Image (spheres, rainbow, N blue to C red):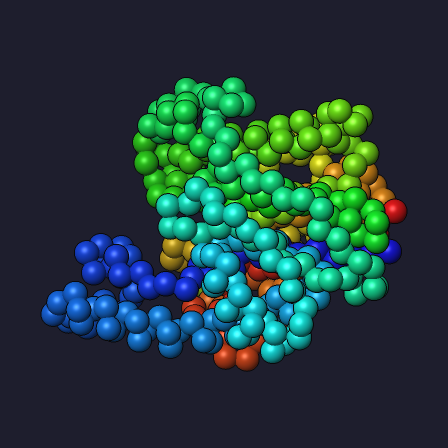
Amino acid sequence: MSVRIATFNVENLMNRFDFSGFKNNLNKDRALQLFQIDDEAQYRQLEQARAIAYADDTRQLTALAIAETHADILCLQEVDNIGALNAFEFGYLFKMVGEGYRHKYMVEGNDSRGIDVAVLMRDQTRDGLPIEFVAMTSHAHLTYNDFGIYSSDLALLGIESYQRIFKRDCLEIDVRIGGKPLTLFVSHFKSMGTPRNGMDGRAASMPVRVAEAKAVRRIIEDKFASSGGSADKSWVICGDFNDYRERVLIKGDTLVGYMFEPVKEIESSLNILLEGGFCENLVERRPEMDRWTLYHTRGPNERHLCQLDYILASPSLAQNNMQAVPDIIRQGQPFRAVFPPDQKFERFPRIGWDRPKASDHCPVVVTFDMV
């Protein structure tokens, strides 16, 4: 009796055009910056053509990455709306996996760009166990005051105590796998952003992600408080947390060769969720150099591999699946990604140097035995 669960940031699965680049060069695609554009009407025509041409290759690759997970339940981030999800599932994913993910669940969250988290489920697992939807709860409405987690660090960022905690949501979905209860908590934490207040983007935005992690933990503790606590229940936290506990720094180039150095981070919002054995980061069962789900670069002087995408398992679920080691699907990564040579993999057809690609993130997937 097993179920296969995946998490994947599909990177801007949109069904609308973004024309803000006409007035804000930071939002203008680099291809359009090569050309002189006379007015907004011309810009809109060119942006529509560019986006449509780029989207087809991208979404074929996104679907290939999802198909490679062979997941029964998909936890997705950066989905525009249910219309975009339906169009992608029917036009792309269906061609690769058939009538697989008939059930789709999402709630509009708090993101200013409109990107939300979503869950897709099959009728049954690969083993033939029925997947039964029980309930869905959004926590997008929660404020810092609601949980008493407002801090001076948040105040320094200009955040008020009455504002909402989650930059998107913590979407809670209860299911039964062959009659066994399982709860999914799907989230997408605050992005690192740009340097400010004399700190790099990660450090400057850390208080927001720390608060989000505290809130997720509180939601889980409250949910199971009346039934003996969360430790012996089956639940997982899935999503893109935009934070890491370790990195693999990359030095060198193609002339002298690349060097890879693993380093630990003292501060991380993940510590809030993992401390005291509250849950386990299953990806840490993989070798230290082989846990990355994202390649980051701002040029040759700033490059690293890191884990941003997580499947965190409850103590009971982790204990009952001691041999379960997540797979990380990297075939959709662009050719610019640098990684240790012993991790060589064959990429999907039509992958480019930087784009098209499946996403900037890699899907993470693991099989759980439901005991």
